[in-house]
Length: 177
Image (cartoon, rainbow, N blue to C red):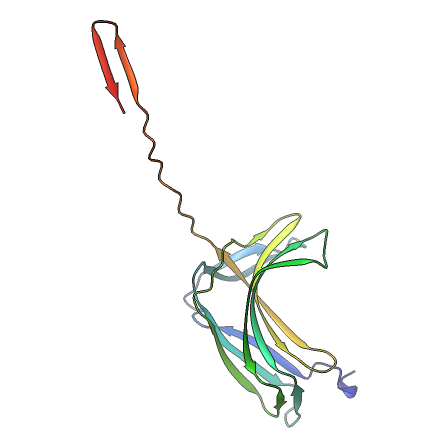
């Protein structure tokens, strides 16, 4: 297939900044295996590099643009084709043209709002991921990198005090809150 220009002619790597200092979280996949992914919190920035490596040195890769997306989506297992995206940010890395050598692009999504926590259940999955797409004529080259999000919830303080009265009639009377 690569002979006709339909094969994958480049490798895409997504490298996030600060990975050595960031915590990892384990999540279960659909088939029951466990995977480790980087842990992010609501409001944190997501930044890094996208490296594109041509498989054959000296070859060229024509494209209609290169973009990276930060996506938060809910997948229902019984409705595979229909995903609900609740967060979507896009950055254009390169305009349409040709890649004649390996390339590296920096990206940053500043203070990304991540309203929900990552979740994998028996019927539904809520996930956050980065998707790099090299848009081409026939088939796009796509690479995804999952991440885990935890939200630190702050619960409201309960201010309603309870008033109690205890006593013996005409003898002792105690009132407290």
